[in-house]
Image (cartoon, rainbow, N blue to C red; front, side, top):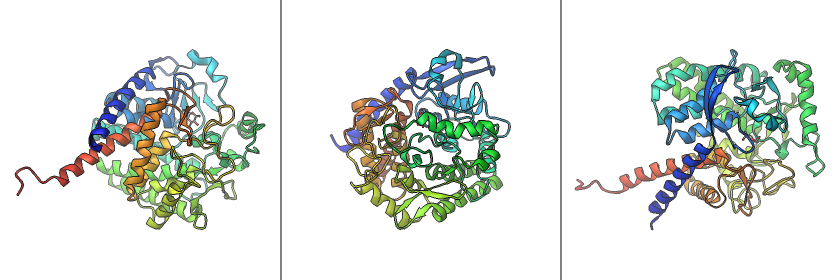
Length: 442
Ligand code: GLC
């Protein structure tokens, strides 16, 4: 079989597995507490039965390829309980009462019994773009964009108090990268087996509770402030995408505003976080903005940005090709192989993001590689990711050296591989048409 035929077969199989997975992980019902129906895909029915923010954005992107109506429901579930100020919770506990035993194992700060009081990586605009493209287009955009704008305005107004264009997270779990070793020192952890993550979480969350979780007072405490490179790359990209979506519905001033805000965030990342000596971007922590010099996948994320300077992009690609850092048998490890904290697979008791390979970060990096002229390397990552899923199922994460799947089984965002396979299948079809002379050509 030629490559195109192999790709098509793989895509067909993946479509089938993803549909089945999203049936198994579908949560549907009526929530009396807010008097609304819900219909969303949970991250994993075994460990995470509720609606998580960034997970749902990935689920919506995946659903946009085969079920436009469920893709809309996924976003509707996120927007349903948006607060009047624009905030959207990182977890909505729609069916809380059915899973009280699960709640006991989470370290989560609550705004209400049904909503967490945290954010997660802000990829709502990217998700909305996919849902619109796979479904009702501009009519859908007109319905949801006002709420989406309010969310990004809230991020700017509340999470960028120094107005440098970079937003900050106030707890490690807000990055979505909960136990990343880049936070160890900030959290008073050693990276060893004796580390108590629950105690570390309380060291941050308890003083916040004491100030009523008022964001301005939380910033003033300076317990955990992180201008995270991944969060801000996603923030920049999503402001850019929101600008494009606003342009599509004729909102020219708002479109220009978001385009300018996207550039400002990108410029701030380069001016403040880029380290030309190391060839990496560093998060800035604390009110004094000290760099967190642990090389994690976050340090490569700006590769996603289409207008990133080509010389910087090339330096990041070097990292991805270097077996001493980010090239691994099963790419891309979430921590550089050169870091003493690197653990390729399972780490401690349920610790995550300490070196294993994740599908959602591969989704971002593969797209970044295509944007910066490296479809060959993107293809390698896409194929390796698809193979991991074919061998081990949709797992939460995979061992970067052996490929073995770990963490939650039936993990829904790993299905976002479908988006990569669909995208390249359409691109390949377009280039085949270009290469073949038109029938009976002139
Ligand atoms: C873990 C991950 C987080 C994710 C959540 C639900 O906490 O670190 O990023 O959103 O699980 O899947």
